[in-house]
Length: 188
Image (cartoon, rainbow, N blue to C red; front, side, top):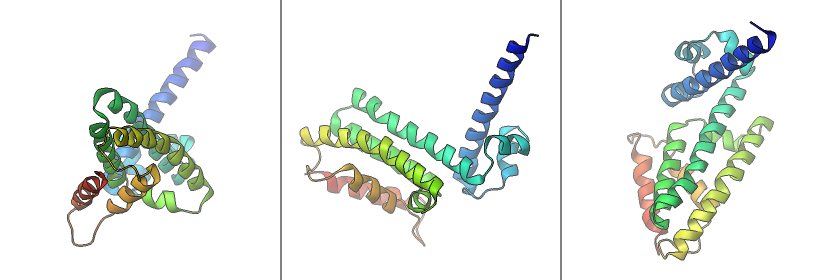
């Protein structure tokens, strides 16, 4: 085996390990929260703890990587929905997808509010990716007469994040119900 092919194989293995870690962390965070034990993540990924720490030296690095990946997937869904749905339906479908992101990522809202430097970068990434996509969708839905013209992306992003927080004494899906009420309030 040549040195180049060995290096490629190692890089491919490293990419697979990274992908496995991110998928495992996403699943574990959804069920156990962002403070879940590292061993739970590595067991699910089928890698050792050393591999986790080689890719993500600090817990916050892993949390941020998972959240950025999920933010990107949600933002990328916007243009896809606009291409396949009428403007208002695309917006409503995207808001529901965003609701799922916020509702299943227990640490997202707190990470976006944290004063830490690492979280500042996540916050910037969040608004840079989500804001323009949502502004475009809102503008299209407003032009079609499907939503009020006096709302902006920041309004929707913040309202959904707040409505998706757990409510003591209510079932986990209660926030989705509140978001549905909010969606109704967007209509003219």
